[in-house]
Length: 211
Image (cartoon, rainbow, N blue to C red; front, side, top):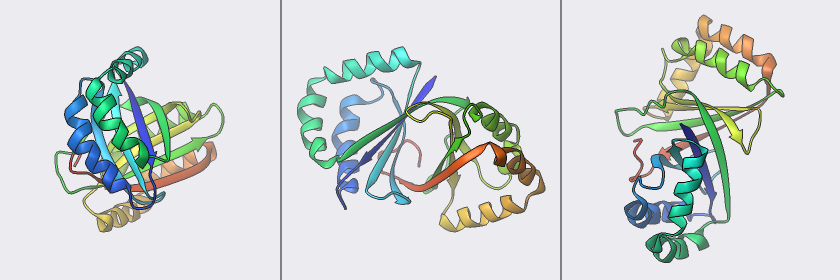
């Protein structure tokens, strides 16, 4: 299994329009026949005017075949792309190997935080292992929906997706985790492996499987 996280940057204020178009036209056209949609979000804190969508495929060959087939879908080509294209300023993708199985929440009304860490060269595997080994301590405070090592286009990167009931819950959970001695031990091991940390907070759209 591999995952693809696609980030589309739109003109100011146009991200909700793109998300609505994706839900009303894009989803009915492609369903899960061209890759399985795992989540679709609008960014709330961090880089703005972005939509982010997470897809899963069996492997890289499966992704290539399904994206080629999608390009031949007439409704996708003629109905969706002509309307979506003018709303997209930039497209970025991450191809990612899972370190642990994806764990979507069963609840709805959640807030999501996507954190991506650039590690020192060659240290992403060790960083991800330390994080996964210590995950029980961190999940005392909030659940982790996914943990990945990037294949492309960001080498030496580990990313993870967190689920919170609200922004207030996020603040409370992160404060509690920071005071947890078991989690502090994980942070102490991983700190020397890091070069850079980034984070953004996302809100699921109406068509997102993760709510």
